[in-house]
Each structure stands twice: as structure tokens, then as C-alpha cells.
Image (tube, rainbow, N blue to C red; front, side, top):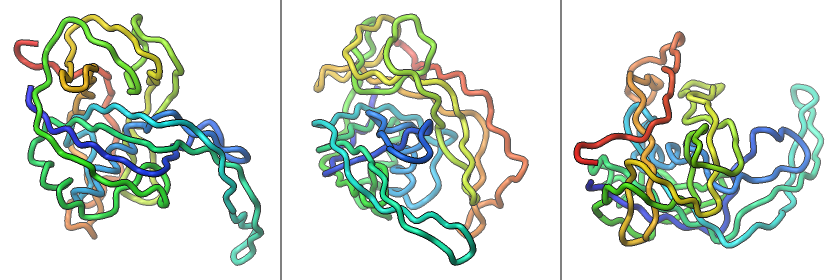
Length: 242
């Protein structure tokens, strides 16, 4: 199966754990799908969701550290006091992004907006873009990626995470479901895809049926206030001959 593989790197990255609202802010070991779709949206310059593109990724870093950041707590209209939080971040992050929609190659060659690996200060750079063939196999190994839960072959941290957010403000999470964060190498059998260059499995998250409306100021259709997220099965995309 032909896909584009985009190699993205940065100095630091931080992905907020939704279970922690205040105080110490630990980072997830890898980005949720909503971050990946945010990166594609920034590169294309148009709103991109699981309705438009299927994705797979492998994310790695060289360790963690803790930073101090200033936050402002608003008590009234113009009243705010400063405070300090400790925030965890990942060092030397690198993301390998797999996309079957080949037309997005141009978007990553000349991104419309800055690419971020988490916060607005976590700037990222496209190191390389390659057109490759993923092999269909009956067995592979997964590591440093995100797979739908439950699955009898998986183990690791389980976290409820959104696939994307609504376009209107305030943002609302969409497609939230349980995912298994695979940080250790796991052997997996089934109809799987494998990157022979990197020697690891690639799980492609399927597109969600239906349409997703975006704000009128972006020149698209008006926001559908009654929008409901279809049920997300979490199955891998199936292809002929795999």
C-alpha cells in the first residue's frame, strides 16, 4: 500500500493528560490523534479531521524533564494573579506520520502555518517526506504508537482520548474513546501493515463516515450546531489483498 511518510522533529513536546486540570501537569508519552489532526490542519491551512484523512504514526523521544511555567488565574473580569505550575515535557521528540492521501504531500512541503508538537511554544520541523510502500503481513511489532482498546493482544497505559475537536469556540472533543498507549514492543498477529524500512508495524486509524463542517470565516460551510459524532469503531483500515 502506497503512503507518504513524514518525519517531523522538534526540541521539546508536551501533550496534556486530560485527567490533570490543575497543579502538576504530566505529559502523555505520545500525542493523541487530535494533535496529529491539528498538525495536518496547520500544514494544509484548512480544517482536517478523521472524516477527511486516515492516519498512522510512530512517536519517539529521548526522555522527560520538568519545567516551571507561569499561569494566570482570573478571579474577575480584569483581576488575575500569577502562579507557577510544574509541567513535564519530552526531549528530542520525533514523529513519523503515515498518510494514504498522497495529495497532502504538497501541504507538508510548504506548511501554511507553524507545526506544533503540543503547546504553542513546541515548534516542529519537517525533516523529510517520502513516498513508500507499506507491506501487508500476518504479523508485526507495534511500539511508540496508539491503538484502540480493548484488544486481547495489547497491554500498557489505557487512556480516554479524543480524535479531534469541533471547529467552533469553545472547542468540544469529538470521537473520544479508549486507546492503549504502546510504549513497549508488542508482537501482533492479524491483517497488519509493516514499514520495511523502519522494521515496525503501522496502524492506520480509519476515516470516520460523514461530513464535518467548519467555520464560515474559513470559507467553508457553516458550523452545524446539532453535529453528533458517529460511533467510532476503532478498526484498522482494510485494503484488498491484506
